[in-house]
Image 1 (tube, rainbow, N blue to C red):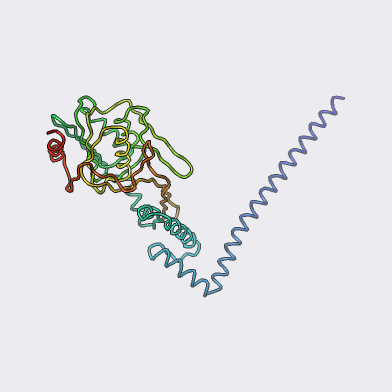
Image 2: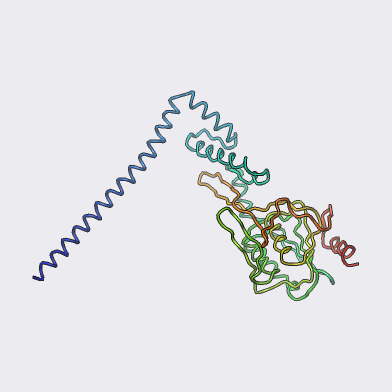
Length: 312
């Protein structure tokens, strides 16, 4: 009697293996059909275009006009996908303001190469000086693995409490990850530094750092090139601390964007979210200085202006 259940088990196992085998065969067949259908569709589309000189000529002309001489390469398949991307971007940019539209871009190979070289070799520079009354800290950009660590090396910042002159003139931004680390040196742990809002979600960033810079009051030097992450730093400091802006109105880049590099050497940038403070305020038009100053300021001249306007 015990042999019958064993035979049933073996039979069920064989049937299960047969079903699995046929399932794999069917799925593989369907995938192959889908791939053939895609290739066949493009081949037929390509055949119609190439066999109809008038249609091909018009499409070719449209792609060339839209892509421009620097992006049109004369390859139907490659030009066509870039042509579609450009048309979609143009449609999106019609609904955006001019400043945002300049960042929604499809970049050609030459421009992509320049962008890559800039990202790989940022012009990072952090300068520290001090006097009897002031700390002076110049941050030229926010470079991963450099800016935060270079500030930590300025030991007097963490041991002597003075007024701080934070120089963000010419700082066009950098990496938000590095900015988050730097903000932790200024703002109390757990405090909201800023938020990053998109249509689908809101990310909230909070300060976190074991070390804190010692200061009484912060004076921030700005110019028309102070932008992006540098402006987010101003946003975070203004909403948490007592700061005074001296110099020129900042650029007003209050958004972040995604950047994707393609295998063919082209790349795409697309604005994805807006930076706001913890109260929901943002800065599309930049930050106006509390004390306007039209020329570039160094440590000495900034200290003189502060002493004359805020210390006397």
